[in-house]
Length: 302
Image: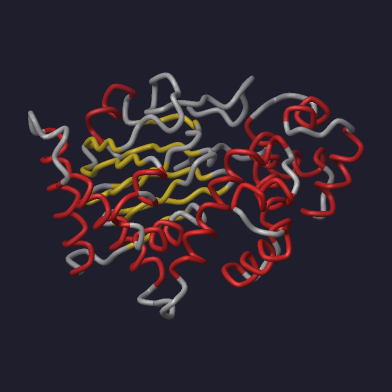
């Protein structure tokens, strides 16, 4: 049985393998290849700097995404941004694929237009559900199978086909998530800048970078950074940074059995009392009360 608390949240590159953030440019494997080794249960863990898509074509998976619990029956895609605690319990013989990507793979190079799709798809964790036999699901499954075949074919390490297919997968999934919404023309540069900002936040939020540091790295003033953030998300840049810090605090309170004061220090707060005030202002509960409210449930059930 999966336990909700441990001394630390395991951090892996691929599940069970040592973490090496940012080094896995692209990896894809069948669900069965790894989950069989762990009796169809992947305990809660986290990836730093890596993005994942779990595609379930046939079968069922009980899913933990931070404090959320869901059941995904195929066909369905589970989207896991970096830093999200996630775990899976699969029904035996579940058929599907797990795609792992580095952000650089999708926002650099000749396919920068995929940056918007990448940002939209991985803005939050979630499960995208499809009807059995739905055309979008059939296309996604075919793309992922072809990507897997290309990835595992000898001598194709330098071929560009796997990259094209991976970008097509991200594009299709982002379309499904957005339900066909499209952005107006002329926003490409703004979207690329906003994607870079989100990636910088992911790298530096625990260091409590100032807005000036983020803006300087992006070549913007703080005022322009705030205008960009509001245009793309409806929230200020500082609000987005604080949201990310709050999500991390919630994850650690739920999954790490350590005093809140210790977690405050790990999160970059020198004063535990200030951390408590920050957390209560964001969630409406003190860290202690939030943990009490969430510690009664198992990460995976059913």
